[in-house]
Length: 94
Length: 485
Image (cartoon, rainbow over all chains, first blue to last red):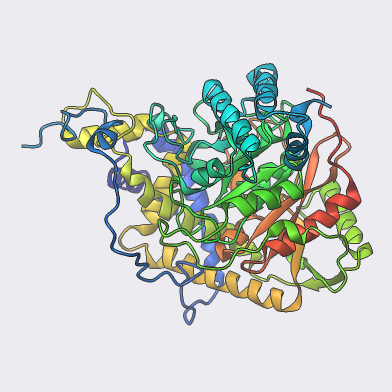
């Protein structure tokens, strides 16, 4: 096995997901299959290969520092599940 | 012929002559949607009133002599592109009631060109999937055979265009999501070079791979759409400053002096015999038109799926972290703590395919596994990119199948994600290398399912693909075949 149920549960926690027992069982099997498949990359020696993160060099894309209109507060809050007209509301932390 | 059956170029000509109005054209498409979309599910949202208002404004513009390239042309927009004031679901329950507060740059561009936006096209949840079956709001059906998949993730876009509910659609292609449904539905679809078209306002799936592209009923229409949507955008830091040619000027007959590369690795034993025969016929057609055929090799093709299914989920796991129920989207109201709210909102809001990819990505990026998975995949991506550079030193365009098979029955492979991922093997590498790719109808199987031919070119060589696609289209004359809906 490339991945255990416990590892999937841990990764789910990191990704802020909760899985039912049935989902955990199914995901473990599927992830194991996928991870076993991607192991085929080990056939290639890449020790001297530079990784590609973007096909074109993307480096410090600046634009003119001109003040433009941004979203209004109403627009920014428009889709919030809960707000008080000024800020987003979430369950109390402290 | 009914107005909705025209191509964009034909409809524009009719409107310019005064034979047709934008309002009549839009009404024709809305009637078509009312007639067939209950079965086909090409649309998640239809904005009839807004469309008719835009059409009336387009008619006024044409009368004033200020008509843009798409003046009065009804189009759909994949439901992951922001259209101001309209619902944008990304095919997911987590964004079911989200209203976009601004326009994506490509949406603004088609609006400025005078297009009439009919509504939002059905898609796989967050563009993840290869069949559009992961959409939370109904699954689009292949208009050529309704029990078969439309392809994904821009399935609704392809179905809407193929069934004449709209004239064109804007889709997005992260691993083949414009080209694959275009092929399975018998229309033209183009993934431009990465950076050629703005991604501002496109909901990110895998940021280094995503690219917006048009789906159309003819190559000329595709060139027109590319003229409208291409170009540098300061709002997108990955947009490339490169002059945009007039793509329509490249639609000329004859391919003398053009070198067509046939990649050996794309014609393997898993390839369906009918697909193989249709692509071979297309290669023969290109030769007849004056092209020189050369065999080329892309030796790392067999690693593309593994590379893609590490890089795309890794980027997705990061991009989708924003869906936490705080600023927008679904919130689990039963949660009592912040952590419970995050977990509950995400677990109840996302579907299984999205969860699966977030888990793969989180695992591949997690401590102790990063080098073995993400870094390794990014290194093999370099090898894939180098393969293409070598191939394009020997040829101007690559010709291949788009998918190994024609469309397949809905529900097939539902429990085997790996086999679905493998169906993308011929399209993924263009995204990994950032090169342009295009699907052009090549023929039909005996069962009446369309099969596309894939054209791939070097960076910023979209015009070469359009020229080759135009020649193929002219020679094959498949466009007038009627759908029996």
